[in-house]
Amino acid sequence: MKKIKFLILFFVITNYSLAQKFAYVDTDYILAKIPEYNQAQDKLDNYSKGWQEEIEMTMQKIEKMYRSYQSEQILLTEEMKSAREDMIFAEEKKVQDLQIKYFGPEGMLFSKRQELIKPIQDKIYDAIQQVATNNKYSVIFDSSSDLIMLYTNNNLDKSDKVLELMGY
Image: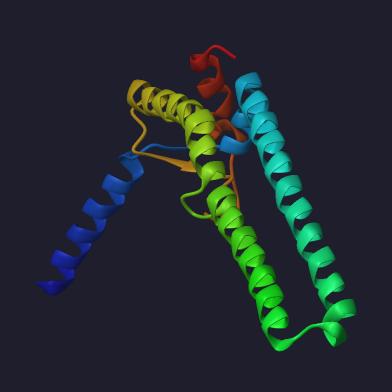
């Protein structure tokens, strides 16, 4: 009796899994084909470069202050040494604060990325949802993510269909 129940369960599961439709998309490929994404990425790179230059200039200023302190240290009183060290530490703290402000987890780069890239990602997601609904796919994988796909049938790649739905 257990064998019969097992066989029935096996056939039900097998038939159910065969009835499901699968596909995949490559979001890196899709993003590369969208001009707005490339423009947004260029804007992000320009913001990042400007902020990095600001940080580097401040770091150079600190390095100059430190070298000056090192060369004059012998001539300074303990109070003057302490004051100079405090100034250097304060400037280093400012640099750390700038790095967090610009590049931290909730920094300006993250905010700009959300502002510029998220709407494009939302459009892609909506198009993928539409492809899945129209073609009755149970699952659509992203081949550009950490999901390891050891074999893919190119007929299942719906990246171009997503681009087509988005007007690209």
